[in-house]
Image (cartoon, rainbow, N blue to C red):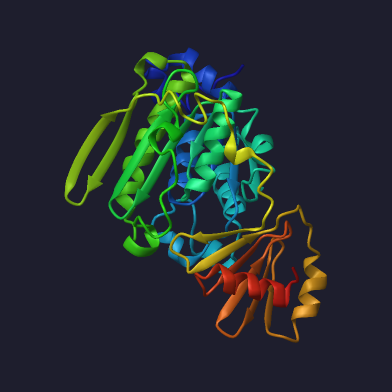
Amino acid sequence: MHIDRKRYSRQILFSPIGEAGQARLARSRVAIVGLGALGTALANHMVRSGVGTVRLLDRDFVEESNLQRQMLYDERDAREGLPKAVAAERKLRAINSSVRLEAHVTDITWRNAEELLTGVDLILDGTDNFDTRYLINDVSIKHRIPWIYGGIVGSRGMTFTVRPGATPCLRCIFPEAPEPGSAETCDTAGVIGPIVHMITAHQAAEALKLLVGDTEALDRRLHHYELWPYHHAALRVKENPRCAACALHRYDFLDPENKEPRAVSLCGRNTIQITPAKPARLNLERLARRLSPLGQVERTPFLLRFSADEHRLVIFPDGRILVQGTEDPGVARSLVSKYVGS
């Protein structure tokens, strides 16, 4: 395998990586779930480091409020309302054309998680919700693929590296997701850019250690950073012998029994995402014609926007719909039923 020694010269000079490690990076495959603040910084690190294949997974599109902290996007992306996976792929391809990029505009659910998160050497967490993280954790344990958790809010963040069979997993640390409304989110507490890079620097460094095979250098602790005022804690976590995932091998979040449409509040957006219970393929052209007498319709190659009164529906071809202007799942479902159908 040819290695571009000029491009990666400073990384090759770093002895824990060297030429052998750089060759391993070039053979590696990484999936990044979520291309918001954490995910864009992680993708930037992986692509610039020369990881051979990077799979980009995100359900959302670029908005102006993203630009404060999501490093791969610009004002044009926001004006055009590009899906984040598409915008990120374009930027990353210009950064390193030798990396293979796989962009997927999709939501990770129990239906597609195993398809999208397997066939890789590592999964990186750039999400903003525990539902998706538990899906990642189940796939990780079931298929023995390491993953690196990261979460931020306000000026603080946490990160932990999960290696199936060698470390505790996410459900050892958080057996259940926090109750809705019980914890701060970026919707209630905001988020500043520096904490993004504090957490992703740790995640990316752990990722490089894993991918080059330097497992002795990996950190087994859960790290918590607070930047305002500064505080750092590194906590040792013990395996839970009764953990549903890594001890009992019960993959609750991959269980297809839950077939109800999902209504998820998106962090900081005053938006509810409705995901269909069954796979769907919407004809956006036909839908645009039907909705145009009822309100303002905007069609792009990737989605359809429909505005009526104080609400806006952002409709994707896979049947996902973002209902903007409400945090009430009942109101969101009602609007989807009214304008799109149940």
